[in-house]
Length: 262
Ligand SMILES: NC(=O)c1ccc[n+]([C@@H]2O[C@H](COP(=O)([O-])OP(=O)(O)OC[C@H]3O[C@@H](n4cnc5c(N)ncnc54)[C@H](OP(=O)(O)O)[C@@H]3O)[C@@H](O)[C@H]2O)c1
Image 1 (tube, rainbow, N blue to C red):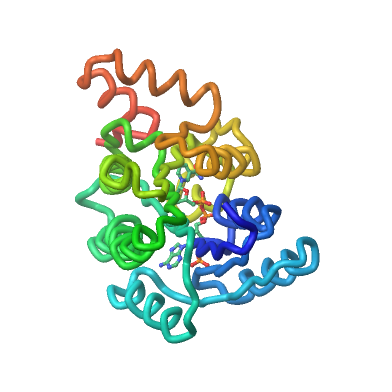
Image 2 (image 1 turned 90 degrees about the horizontal axis):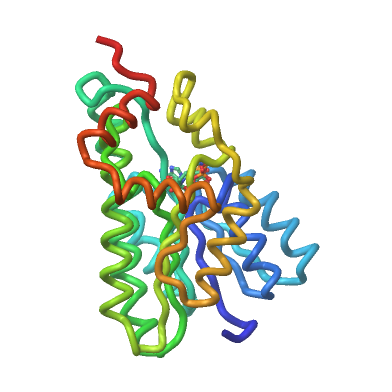
């Protein structure tokens, strides 16, 4: 892909999204950085402009608001900005039993992790197909391969992202655009703190650095791999998950997520 492509990255203010922004900046891509934390985005944009001589635009947006994806699309269309690559990375989790976690927080999670990702994909994909150029990188998780007692809604949102992205990748085959999904395992970012992770072994045992996760996702997208599981340990884990009976997976994940409490 040419160096003049424009890449929109959601959740670029920290963690995996921030590191993905650095990877695309090294390619010479023009970046549109989206998240709620304007200061963090401005700081990153400044650094990327200075170090890579690229254009980096900050777009403050709250993806938990249903109208946000369309607002972003309309704003960029009005500026005649063509988005070649969409990176749907923004997301968060919440740890606890489904019946006890706040209802609003769980609905917000579905809005950010699933609905906004789907809406942004639907808004930007037709233009990409028309131009026979570009693609989408969606950030799912190893959690997408299993059921997640103790983080029930989060794991389900990631199962959606994984299934949805694979389907879109198959539908867009031979259109000249590429669709990939990055499946990180536990990675040291703000994710654990946001999710409330004190007792969660799976998050505490994280081994893959956030830089490596981002590099793997970026490389998978560039090489047109549909599913990228970052890290050998995580690839092995997914293999075991495929072989193990579902009742056993439920028990293991429940234990790793700090349960049972009752
Ligand atoms: N870390 C892990 O162990 C792990 C493992 C597998 C998958 N993942 C996935 O990786 C992705 C990135 O997470 P991370 O680990 O890098 O965590 P992080 O450091 O907490 O980053 C999350 C990003 O999402 C953005 N975000 C959250 N809510 C948002 C909202 N309402 N509107 C707009 N942006 C929002 C945050 O920006 P603002 O707060 O500035 O809005 C931030 O930039 C997520 O989809 C997560 O599910 C993480």
